[in-house]
Image 1 (cartoon, rainbow, N blue to C red):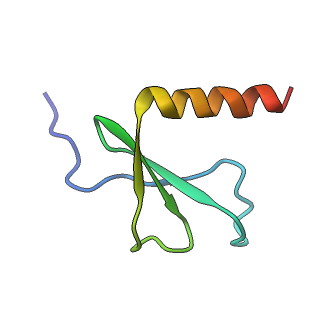
Image 2: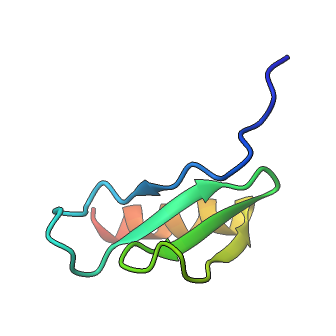
Length: 65
């Protein structure tokens, strides 16, 4: 069995264009999903329950249809 990473592996939104702007990063925090501002990687983050994050993503996806 592999050990979980000691620090979260943050990844930037796939919609980020790389020029800064309004970007978020997310990380798997095991029991929750972490969300932070990509311009402030050392700042605070929020953690939401996995089902809440899944509902948010589904809502965004439906808005794009």
